[in-house]
Image (cartoon, rainbow, N blue to C red):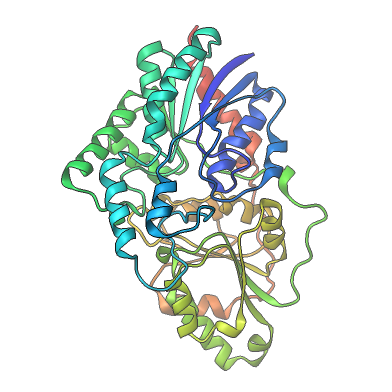
Length: 427
């Protein structure tokens, strides 16, 4: 069996979107005669925990864990957070008010002393460990997946020292990620970020990413052999029997709603229909599963939607899928950021898999529209009239147009990955 070394920060029991992509590739790679060897931290910062995900690691996989030194213990102590506090990603902030002066100082230090990110201290020890491992246990291809993009520096050094073909997988953009502008970068640090990004893109033997527009952006930055393998869904994950659809008219969002995903015109359109439609007022429920930025909560309260909101915190993957199955309509606002055209989160495919109507807020030329097809409603951000029309059509129980989504099944996507690996394998 051919062997691929996968260097990934996010791995079970850590949970969340950063885990599923390579967990699923690992699950299905043995079907295509590839043995996955996963290198991951033994003591990572846990964003969420779902121990059940460990059951999906195939018996053929070899998992190597090594200690990592991260600055988050010091960050929590400095900013007054509890040692076991979960750090929010993408600058999502659930409490009111802006960042404290200590958080601003910590952001400046992180931005200028940890390049490209806070996991950079893992690079040198990992290179040393893996060089020794590879000498005794050769592999055919090396894969690094980011974010965190510091992991690509491990792959870059290993390729230079061993000549083993290297694939850099960009689950997220690097300097074009939505919160890059919120980093407090000096000009020097910004130049270093772009310099490292270009080195990875030009030196990797192949570059993967999750959407077509992001692929174009990576090519424009110098990326070569850039290919798109989207995220997807695994039919094995879908709860059986499926959860019953709500009696209430539920509009459901699964996942965090950061400030960049706020949609004030939607909240106002919902409030308007509540005011004029007694049946809607009596049956409507806005269910939010996951974190909600305080600016989003402020706008929800301002629209008067408080009595109609059901807030549910972080849940495991299976429970998240049950919430999707229950929804009368699923809500999918994409980020209001420059990289919005390529924003194609993993939950898009799970939304499709549960076969519930979707209300997406996105540009009409975004990749998400290409994936959703004609069976779901997409409204451009800022178009209040179109939003009122969309809200007026909610819960009309029109059948969803049949769409073939088999290309987005995790096994099919792994077949694409195996094709890339086979093409790079040295003979």
